[in-house]
Length: 260
Image 1: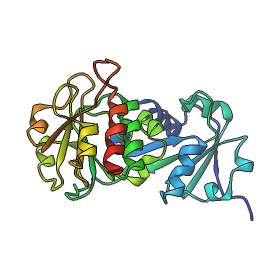
Image 2 (image 1 turned 180 degrees about the horizontal axis):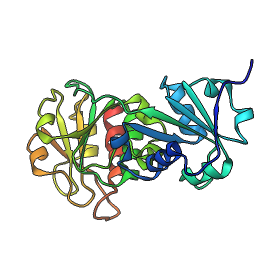
Image 3 (image 1 turned 45 degrees about the horizontal axis):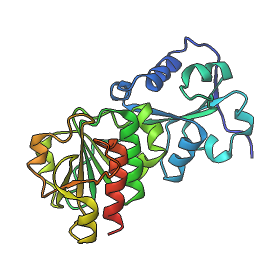
């Protein structure tokens, strides 16, 4: 099979590469450009495995001759750049050799009956990405990110999500009032009040499907969202720590629901 057509870019000042650097390094640039960027073989492969179709594929000059056909034919446009330019764009510790640009999905409509995770001003991008990964693993297909939550399609959240984005129904910039449209019970996590998770699990009082509400790393769930909850849950910590990292707590809670 003949090699796919491509455009070669050698100038660091190329306008497209400038936009790409913004997408890679600015957490909110995707909102302005209507596109987002992923880099590295793992994330690009995960996107293709989920059926996602990039609009532009970018390859390092040294990788291009050996790039898999599925990747060189994935996008409508291929761009090859010098290895040094790729290293300048990327933010991975080990420079990547491939990256994809995707169109930002259209805003999603809230699904009222599916297992969901509500993120209430969770601000750390690593936490948000980790929660998305746990949600995908345990069958919570909808993420409702309230305003103040880390940008879902930002580079750091995408990297921490490890490909989970493409299997989830993502709603960004939601208001607490929208959450009231959920038909499934809302469960609020708390570090100091409510039923202990292991007791609720053993007592079969954990509803499924449900919507777990996870709050700000320091302040927890806001009062407006807390008022919508039908159940408050806390995690026993016999070791005596004051609280758990929100991503760790999410994994524990979502697994408990999924395993019944």
